[in-house]
Image 1: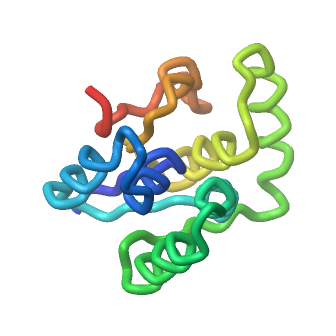
Image 2: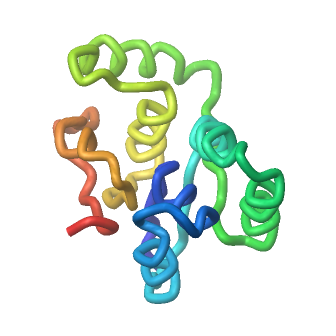
Image 3: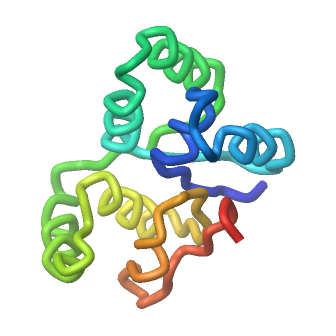
Length: 137
């Protein structure tokens, strides 16, 4: 089964019906065949941006709890790589959540991402490959 990372944008859209990507996020999940992964900083970012509704924040957490996605842990030994990525892409700039997704891709050999963030067309992993965005074509 294919493994795909998911960024905050599609998660926010999924739980915010007023988001311009809401219908696309719902359709994406209905048609997605595989397993979604993300990191705690992405969940933190999504939850913060859903702060207009505690109900939406809880719905996100309940969905994760039911197996909607799985979390890849970022360990303290990854901090050096997070710093390297932040320095390398400081002109973009790369935020912590995005850096953790690149580290998760590198450490788990994941090659795809679901994101609305165009910066992932710039970010490259340690093998100088970018993640294929399967959310926006």
